[in-house]
Image 1: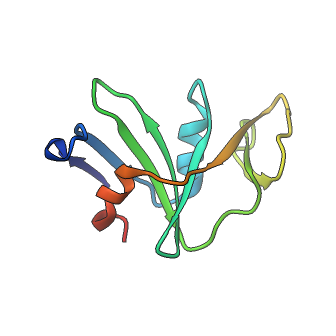
Image 2: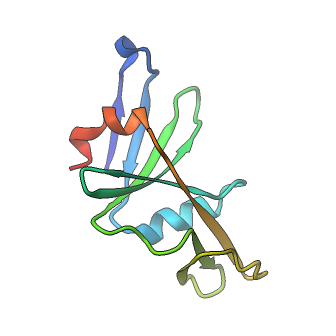
Image 3: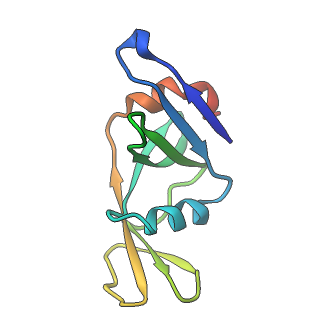
Length: 118
């Protein structure tokens, strides 16, 4: 699902959001970036993992919503097998990409997207 959001009247520039059905798809996308990490925030008992990517003047918000928080502070994607696992520390394995999960206190864009996130 992809949605355009225009909140210029609220002092926030236009952005596009893309929601994934599966966490592993979001992890694969993020692992290909030059700075792989995921943001995490809890909203109304639901856990959202998201990644912001600047794109042509307006950011893209990639996200996945889950009922449970993932265990650990890292998601490790094995680039050979395509499997991923959760841990509390990076593996530094040459065949893998370690994606840290950063805990977010506030995310205005998610507040503005609230109707789409439920």
